[in-house]
Image (tube, rainbow, N blue to C red; front, side):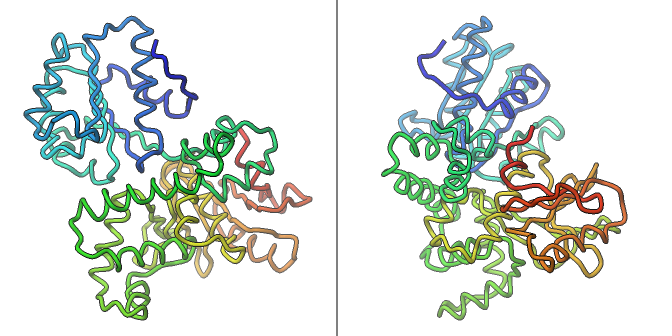
Length: 401
């Protein structure tokens, strides 16, 4: 057993545990500092506790330049030197995308019957040569910053009202969550450090962008407009208005870079009847509200979009696949698992006002199926059900089993 003490995240650990010794390469994807490396360390501890000897476990952090590993061949040699044979061994490679042609090393380990686990902080890791060579042999486990149900475990307080406000303001990166009670004065610096690392390494450095003013402004623009429909042309016009001459194709490419770095997720619009995605403006949501509020000052007028962001990330955590739902002339904020057993969600700060209540309920009533429909409000509401549509506060919804 290692000397480190970890706080369990069973939502992910159960998936890793269940995939042990399966015929898949396990790929943990997620923005930097969301906890991927810690999950692997926790699983390594479990392997050792179950009796797996150290000469059957190899773990390498490829973000550490001290390893001296620069090529896929050096990676193969380094792993081979640590193990007593590949067959039946467990290999863990952290931030594997740092090694050119890393896919060739992973493929070698896989065909030699090792159980392979890798992490990556870039979404295109799954569209690499690895997925082409080993089609159907990759299992993605998407890791996010803490869900609120995990966040309350990390914090040293039972005041959930205060915790929810902290969560909305400072986000759910594990390091930030632990620092909130132990060294709160350092929280903003930690968030700044996380953002700068992701932006400089996974956006600017990875794509060799010369001069980062435009993409930096674009990032702030997307953060400011979370929850709003965002078109490439509209973003390009915004940049032009700021005195930066550009074209929509450049903005489209830059948005792709920000998505690849997992700073943002795109919620596409789905036609509720045709079950087809529409070629219209999408919504973008930030991976963690803490880094958003380090770049864009927290303002009460943004609360609608901020609450939508919390709900979107939670739905991704619970269901994986989430879209915006177009219902004729109306729009439902979110549909989860749209191609399976869908559930529909409207998000509002308050529905105490009758006009606001009607505005949120009308799109849900227009849906022609009997799947669950919910309105999530930041403020509590007296009734728990209106015409078969569930009404629930954000706090209650985030903390329910």
